[in-house]
Length: 193
Image 1 (cartoon, rainbow, N blue to C red):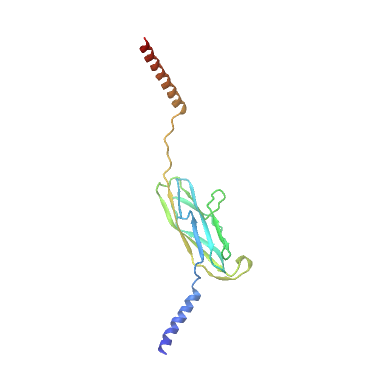
Image 2 (cartoon, helix red, strand yellow):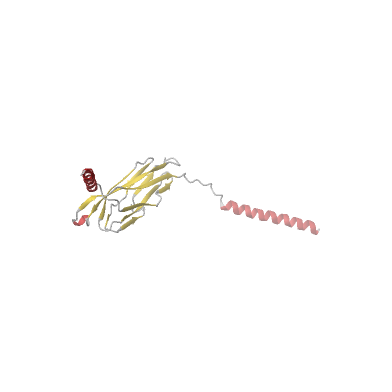
């Protein structure tokens, strides 16, 4: 009797917690590039793409929110298109600044110091549905947030030494040939006399 009284509250608590906790994450969220690291010079535009896979075999995943840690020395812009994925479905979007496709972009300030790094996490939120949420199906639960680490580094501006003019090189080469030819003719003239 005493053992049953002890187990009953534990079972009730376990049942309550299992009903109130969100479902486990069956979503694979990765950045493109896969290491989450992007680089660019001051004033340049850098960004991330993404890959998202719903590994659940029966429920639909609907993306609802994407947050990031803060950025400095640049202006961030959200590009994410909030896909809805059927069971087993995947979507991949590479960063494309021309067509505004991808996950996120960062326009570095022209005064961003070389070596400066923004780093943090992108946090994806979503929901589970028993069918297509846009077709009147039923909400099941909020999904567990999924994170992906990122970093963006300011490269040193590329500076190159000016190249010498090709006319100067050509003139120097011709002058050297004439000079060497003149010296060779003098030697030949002195040895034949």
